[in-house]
Image 1 (tube, rainbow, N blue to C red):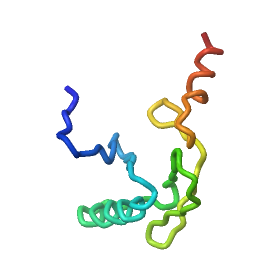
Image 2 (image 1 turned 180 degrees about the vertical axis):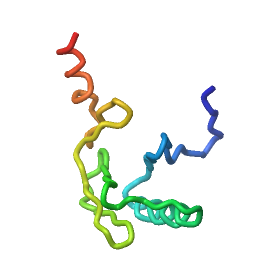
Image 3 (image 1 turned 180 degrees about the horizontal axis):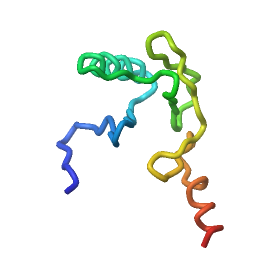
Image 4 (image 1 turned 90 degrees about the horizontal axis):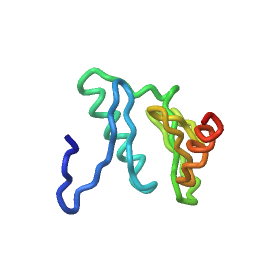
Length: 102
């Protein structure tokens, strides 16, 4: 069953096993990351800054993000649950390999 979102509400994260994908505009991303780290610490979990990566889609900003003063790696694309996501929002990186395999 897919949850129904009420008016003016936004989906801000996806959780799968021990992975979390945060969705935010660039201006609020650091605050969201800080809040996630703070809440995680309260229940005994830790954001692994050394393995955490971030990507900003369809936005020209050069903003950087950090967790506990550790600078996070910014990537142009990554694979999440079998799908390739890229900064320009295109599905080409995901679709082209599938076409070639067919």
